[in-house]
Length: 159
Length: 178
Image (cartoon, rainbow over all chains, first blue to last red; front, top):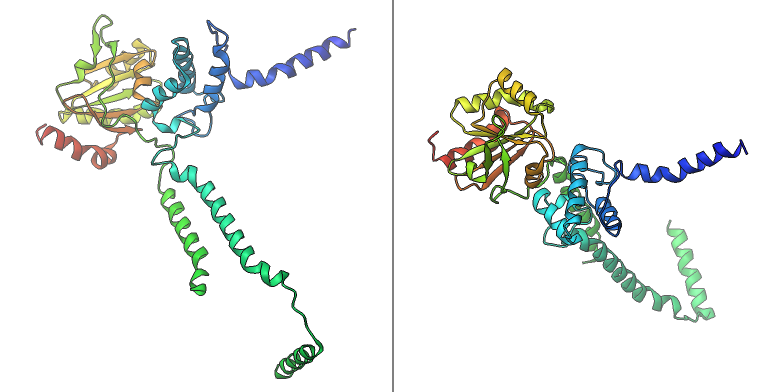
């Protein structure tokens, strides 16, 4: 029994640690259904100060402010898209970890598809060119065989 | 034709190298500004010097001016301050946005280092900061007489930055008179 207590404590600490890593402060919502949306937004939006972190992972003051702002906007019944637009008009598109498709980002979104398509095209064309010669059965009779041997011999002698 | 096709990978590689080379020159910490060309956001906040005085976006219209985001906790603002004093002495109108600061320490700062500001907006919560997309002090905005943001600088404005980014635009907007 006495040995069980520390173990339970360890298990408890282990099971809660990912939560404490994700968001430092406790966030209260009037309606619990907002929480998953909040979580989704802070993970998908980028901290403007600390370039390679999302709002959920960052402890910088600006991320704390923006998390608070997102919570406030959620309570105002704004949709996810409205919240993203709200922040985009202030912090530019940089804040979206998943940039929208527009004239600046079409290359970014399109290039993987283009590369796959070009690859497919190359494979198809290559197969079309190579396959017939591989599958066609070329009969070689004894006369051809002799000519072939002679050619190879000449080749050898020339070297 | 076939021989030329052999050069396709080389050309592609050269193109990619060029794109990456151009990217090297860019400062990744510099965010594209969403607000250049847009009107200065609406606000209603107290003045730093006088709690009872309310300031709104109407107070920054009518003249070309700089809006400087600063705070006493911001180390780079210390470095920038003499330059602001300089500009103010040259007749440039500067409105301060005291960002997430303590009123008393901000007032002491201005008493100690000189006050280049026409007026200071006291934004304790950082609400105007969020509307402006402020992500680090100091930041400086050049706003024209109609209250439209014409330029934004994130980071210290020193002699070099002023000459490179602001002075020409400022002269143009003020029509040469200072």
